[in-house]
Image 1 (cartoon, one colour):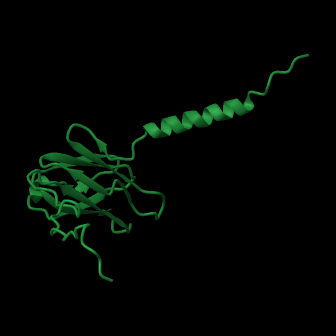
Image 2: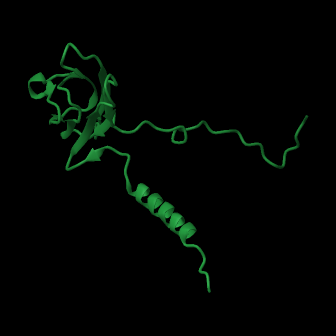
Image 3: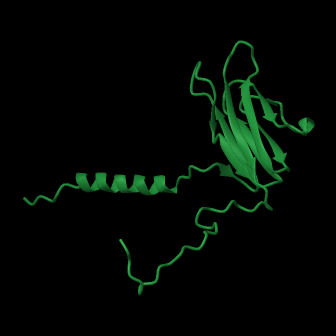
Length: 159
């Protein structure tokens, strides 16, 4: 009777390799679709508050940000600074999505909180609308350094 080597070890190795490849395909960056950055709102459990993924979003002027409320609660949203409050959502129903366009460059903070007085908790996040005309700050390497005096090799050193 001939015995073939056990395939169990090779099967486990193949599964680990497959998991590694597939996890490398997953992206941890915010979901973006046609000029829209999507923020997922979740509640980890009873009394667990709110979680945002991602809590920081960077977009270009004129792009949208959408908030998808995956909780079972209705939420209120407060965006600061809010120069056009009539266009901004103030309320997000449970299992709903709202979106708004950010036209002006700047940094916007937002706070989500439960709309019911019986529940407590809030989550804060930031939206950065980059100015396309702003030049990046020079790094230390890019800054001009004063010329350094070079001592010729032919002169003797005095100690």
